[in-house]
Amino acid sequence: MNIRLAQHTDLEAINTIYNQAVDARYCTADLDRISFKERELWFDIHSEDKYSVYVGVVDGEVVACFSFSAWRSGRRALAMSSEVSYYIHDKHFQKGYANKLMDFAINKAPELGFKNLFAIL
Image (tube, rainbow, N blue to C red; front, top):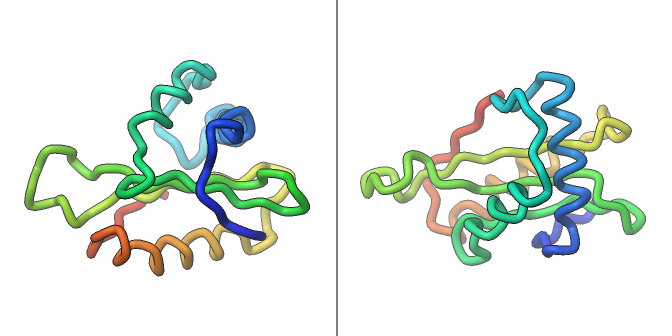
């Protein structure tokens, strides 16, 4: 799996993957599916230089997504902390992709100025 910065053209795949988690009631606190418009708004608040979104790609297909997000936004003492979220397409479970995404996050975090990472699992 190759990991790259997400593009607007990836949003349909990202939203499909996320809504699978919503439907299955795991790894998200959302109980209702996210619309494409909501996904666009979410994507727009994630900047490439700090709170970026990435996708995992296998054979040209987006099979996973990952993001850094503000942890308690506006609290300066937590500026070096980030929430990490990742989701895997349900046809691609048990392939080690979650481990690859978390390894990527841990290695990328210092470059973005993060010392602490949080995840809700």
